[in-house]
Length: 290
Ligand SMILES: NC(=O)c1ccc[n+]([C@@H]2O[C@H](COP(=O)([O-])OP(=O)(O)OC[C@H]3O[C@@H](n4cnc5c(N)ncnc54)[C@H](OP(=O)(O)O)[C@@H]3O)[C@@H](O)[C@H]2O)c1
Image (cartoon, rainbow, N blue to C red; front, side, top):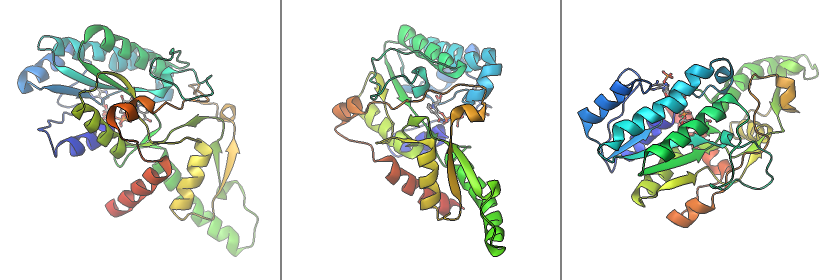
C-alpha cells in the first residue's frame, strides 16, 4: 500500500527502483546484499512489513523475521557503503495509556506482538545504522491493498441493498443494515499518498532520526467509519458504536495512539492536511480508479 505510493511520488524527482517480494525477500540476508550490489542506491526505503496485526499473535516467529530480523539484514547490507535508510514503524509501539499526542522520544511499551516486533526493528535500525530516517505512522489507507476504508465501503455496499429492501417493506433497521465499529480506540487515519509526499519532504530536508508522520487531527474508528459513509453517500447505513472487547480480536490495540506532529512541522515548515480532507481526496481517487 505505502510502497506503491512512494514509488509514484518519488519517481518524479528521483530514479526509483521498486522491488517486490518476488525480487527481494528481506528475510534473506543474501537477497538484501545482492539488491544493494545490483543497484548501488543512495537511499534504501523499506516499506515491507508483516502488517497483519492479529496474525502476528499466532505467528510470532514469522512476524519478528520480517519486522525485526530483516531490518538487521537491510542495515548490514547498507552499512558497508553508509547508505541512508528510510524505514517505517507504527503507533502500536506505544501502550495507549497517554492522554496527549505521543512525542518521538516518549517511552515505548507495545501491547501486542506486532508492536513488539516493530519496536525490535526500530532498535536494530538505531543500533546498526548511523544514517537513518525512522517514520512512525498510523491507521494507513491507500489505493492499493486492503484497508479500513475499503472494508467499510464494501460492507456498506452489501448492506445498502438489504437496507433498501427493509425500507420497501417498512421494517425497522436490523443488524443487517447496521455496521458495528469500535469507539474506544483513538488515532490519526493517514492517507498513504499524503505520507509519501511527507517522506519526499523529509528526504529533501535530509531529516535524520525518528519522526511521527500522520494526517492532522484524530478520531475513533467509529467516527472514521461514520465519515467514510457520509462522504461516500451511504446515508442508509447506521454505524453502531461498540467496545473493542466485544470484537474478541487476537491482538489488543492501544486505546489512544495519536502521534505528535510538532517535530515534522518544525523540520519541514509544512503541516499535513486534516484527516477529513485526506479522506475526501482518497475517495475522489478511489472513484476515478473504478
Ligand atoms: N497499515 C497500517 O495501518 C500501518 C500503520 C502504521 C505503520 N505501518 C507501517 O507502514 C509500513 C507500510 O505498511 P503498509 O500498510 O503499506 O504495508 P502492506 O500494504 O501490508 O505492504 C507490505 C508489503 O511487504 C511485503 N512483504 C512482506 N514480507 C516481505 C518479505 N519478507 N520480503 C519482501 N517483502 C515483504 C508484502 O508482500 P505480501 O503482501 O506479498 O506478503 C507487502 O507487499 C510498514 O512498515 C508498516 O508496519 C502500517
